[in-house]
Amino acid sequence: MTAPAAATNGIPGAGCDALEGFNRYHAILGASSSCVATHPSDMCVALAALDADVHLLGPAGARRVKLVDLHRLPGGRPDLETELRSGELITAVELALLPFARRSTYRKVRDRSSYAFALVSIAAALSVREDGTVDAIRVALGGVAAKPWRAYAFEQALAGKPAIEANFCEAAEAELAKASGLAHNAFKIDLARSLLVSTKMELSGENVA
Image (tube, rainbow, N blue to C red; front, top):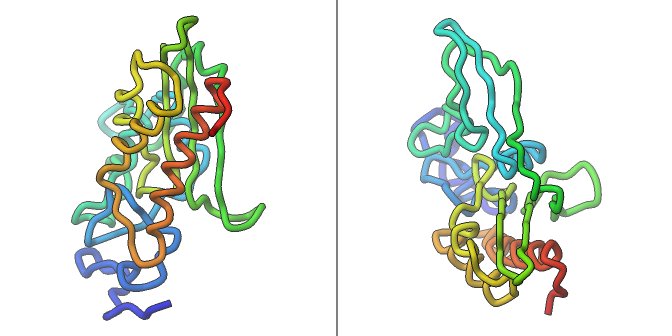
C-alpha cells in the first residue's frame, strides 16, 4: 500500500488520493484524474440492465430519467454524484416490460462471501432465437465505474450475431477497449472480461470452454 503524494481531504478539484493509494476496489471505466471511486450498489446495477425509469418530484414539478442516466461519471466534478436537482426526491422506480428478461441472472465477484462490495458484478438478460442468434440482450456491470455501467458496446456487438463464445469474447473486448487499471486493480479488466463471457455463455445454454 503506497501513501498518496498529497492528502486532498475530499476537496473538489484537489485530485484523488486513491490514484496513488490503495485502489483495489476502484474504477476501471469512466474514471478521471479527479475521482476513481466506484458505485457501491448491487440493486442499481440490476435496475440499469432492466431499463428502469426513475420518477422524480421537485419544485419545478415531476420528471423522469433513465436510471442509467441518474448517476454521473466524475469528470472534473466528483462532488456531483447524480442528476438530481435541488429539492428533488425520488418517488418511484419503474421497470420496463422486458419479457425476454425472464432468462436473466446477477453474479457478483467479491473478496469474501458476505458483507463485501463487488470487485466486479454483472446483471444480464439474454434471448436467443431458434436459429441460435441473439434476439435481445441487456447487460450492466458493477464495481467498475462511478455509476452502474450499462454495457452498450457489448450489447451492440452481439445484436443479431450467433450466441457463441467467440462472439461473446469479441463483444467483451469492444466493451473494455477503454478500460484502464491502476496499481492494485488492473486485474479487474480480465475479471470483467471473464464475467461477461461466462455469464452470457451460461444464459445461452452453452458450456464455457
